[in-house]
Image 1 (cartoon, rainbow, N blue to C red):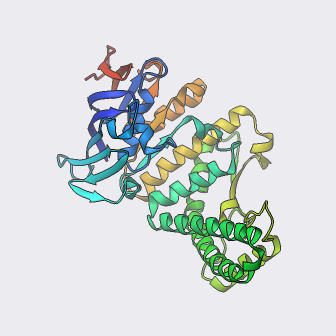
Image 2: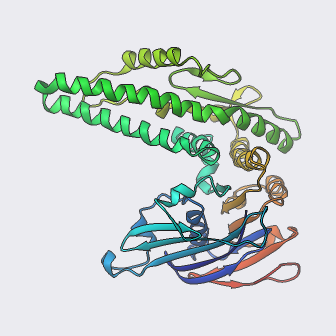
Image 3: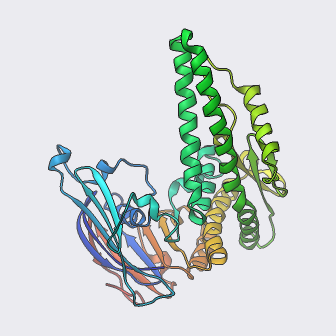
Length: 392
């Protein structure tokens, strides 16, 4: 996929912008808080998933009631590599606080339905904390890989999350009304069954691509360190134990179901005010090792950043090799966090993709073969630069 251009109306601090892009590196540069990341976010929303966590209403620039806010419009024009010259159009709208999206005039239920159809990778500052940050970041990371490959994973996540919420609500009922325990217990059994079955599906969806991720990340890390360090990656299932090489037998549905039941019975105690479902796929994690040593506990800052970097590059390699497509890559202010060696490695790897980067400066990228530099100031965009730069 190649993004050709975008039109933006009334999005965050961007009142109006029409930009054309090159097929290489497109860099939005300027001072902080000018709108660079807002443009990157506009692109990512059109691709199916914004990389910021934000309510729809917060995307609209207004001061007052939602009803008086201007309509937000994002229009993305792109081509597939297999059909050059045939333009496709994504329209993303926010009207009265409600978002709608269509592709080539066909309405979709939500922009999330696009996720996975348009192959892309996002690398934002929080991804530098993939190794040492909260386990939720790592679960989102592995879920996004699965979602990019197969839409059915979205349903497994939704159903599993719904079961978790229902079990928490039922437990609250036990605390509030002890006389309704019998009926509530019946419902707990039903939702626990859903939790188990969807937990198995969710774990399967993640592990289906775990081995591919692990092998790709290990090879890339070996390149980055020129063989001086060896990366290890482990999936830590809250139910099935540590998984590094040998995956569970997902054909043995009865055995998997029994293991889940046994763990739930061991750790779930209903009727307590601090009740949580302490066992399940929502407690799974990834662990990383450098030369056999746990990187989260003993890794240096440079090693931890390197692993985080490699994990995002692995996403792009999986799409390139497994899907036989070239992903679009979005980088939000991350290369400035890296030393020169790692930055050069990333830029070299990215030269095979269309890339969108935010940065305070563009000098680090002047060796790129095809680059379009766009200056950003107070939500306005203008071409700038000189020499080899391919400008608007």
